[in-house]
Image (cartoon, rainbow, N blue to C red):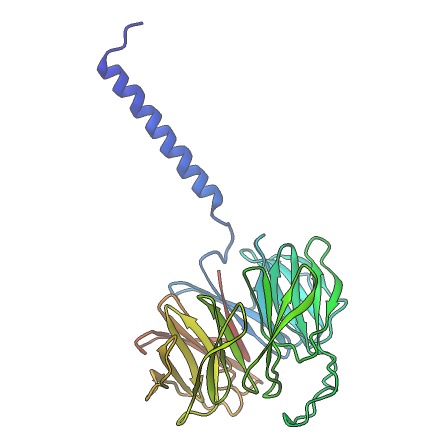
Amino acid sequence: MKINKLTLLALLSVFILNSCSDDTDDLIDQVPEGDYTDGFFVLNEGGIGTVTYISDDLSDVEQDIFASANTNAADLGAYTQSIFFDDNNRAYIISNGSNLITVVDRYTFELIDVIDEGLTVPKYGVVYKGKAYVTNNNTFDDYTYDNDNPPSSYDDFIAVIDLETLSVESTIETNSYTEQIEEEDGLIYVNGSSFGYGNTINVINPSSNAVVRTISTAFGVNSFDIEDGSIYTLSSNSYEVFNKDNGEQISNLEFSDLSGASNLVLEDDKAYFTVNRSVYVMEQNSTTEPEKPLLTYSSTSQYGAMYGFAAKDGRIYIADGGDFSSDSFVEIYSTNGSLLKNITVGLGPNGFYFN
């Protein structure tokens, strides 16, 4: 058969269109499906914990989405503390008042299973290579409430959970308190300070489930983040930076005019944190404290001002605990400090989690 140029061009056009269509179909297939694909969650501590969904454009708000998606299931338990995710589209909702982790599909919030054994006051979790590592405060019998006289031993532990069986397979002791937890470059980093006491970051090798390095910090680190090969820690009066690989201190900014700093978040080379009802921002590696706040919000909460905080993708998120007996609110700001929206959520909102 004789093929002229026009015929050849027509065949090439069909091939290209089919290829583009196939690629588009592949991309569509990769987009997660569910009512909660494009937005973020607000975790409401309770009482009995609930989750509020808010769309990215802030126009759609849905309260208590777990109950809506699971009409015949039990509730999330008492005092929901945090949420973490795995690589298989699952969300893990930790209730430290019920010693419970509820596992749901992160995009539909349909119940998958619960983990209700091997946990004692669980707080925070992280996933690495098919395992979840969850910090547990345990009995609180190890609190001396005196940094000059620390306890002789600690009963906090990390529960190691097999994500195939959803059961606790082992525990790790760190000889410290255990709070926030992060994974970076195949190692697990655990904050060893709790409620103002303790002064360590513990580094765990998940291959051996052993502490391989202990980094000495200021007392009472309440939040930390890892970026660009460094560990950034925040306590009430100081901002420290450590080399991630050897634990050596790189810098230490002791605040002279600020006290009660908390909620450290690193975003776009900036360090965001809160003091009372104000948000402060400075360069990530700054050695000078900011002179004035970026914004101050209005709250009448006696104990729940800045109960939750996040900074992500050009926005600042504040959760107000309110009176802990009725629904409260969150506020979303631009990074120049302009209020974008105030949204009513559930009881005691304490954190933001992004889909």
